Length: 420
Image (cartoon, rainbow, N blue to C red; front, side):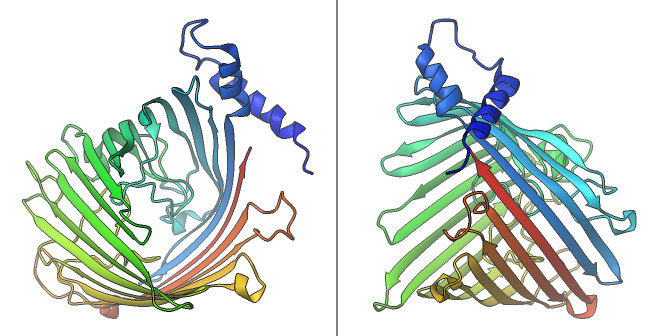
């Protein structure tokens, strides 16, 4: 059995150091055993180590490369009197290697500078299974999300209310700032969108999700930033058996956005859409995927605050340029069925055509991206308990951009997530 004395000592030390001033209720308002449970037995410490090597060769022999180490450490209380909860998460990314002439990997700040930031610090109140949260926190909606594709995720500040009504999950939020993934500070939503010289604007967000049956699920999400953008996303998926050995999962998604007010994002009024359909043929550990996506021709689809939520947001490129049509064929395989639990492979080819420059209306080169991802998780019971949180990932991508040239992208990522 693993030694539990060290984790308990470390947990108690973190509790004392991080949250000694966090008990906001008057003396005697809560029973001492409830406080002891919330800050002790029912609390959670999350130590997430990550090291990430990134190397991208762009057209013109321009290289973005770095190797960083860091991750995050977080502490969350249990529910105090089944009503209150507190949490805090600190993030960091430290340079192990990163020549100044190879800046731009996104693992570090501009100039290959390291960063550290308190990315989350929040208080939650739960009443009738509805939860109100204020502070800094992650948001996990389709178009406003952590987008955790480098060293640390995107987080947001403001307040949110979440819960379930009539079998439908809801999430409503008022956000006043966001922390980009490689930033040490929170910025308002106009600044993050690259709009200078104007007052900051908030972001209003509403998300709904449901699962009418075990096989059918749907989501709807919309956000609004005054004088910048309004964007709405919807998707659905349905799973059905074809035989004892095969299943078919069908999915569809649709997105629509417009400039609002002064339309500061692109400098003039605009509207655009994007949509896709997807089919997954599932045979035990193997999945074969086919996708088609198309984007309206008025404007490139805008995603100023997190990654694009489309099916064809690949390792390198998001296939959402104005007028672009794109298809993908891909597949994945989990080798647990072959006696290698934890090992999985995913590969895809995407081709996009008919894109135009939204300003000049001239045609743009076609894109073809080839992606390969290898994952190994130390999840097999033959590994000791201390090793099982390890997750190794290797990713390789090549993008043929026609007359714009080729791009090669290589990544090695190691994660270790320890909760206690």
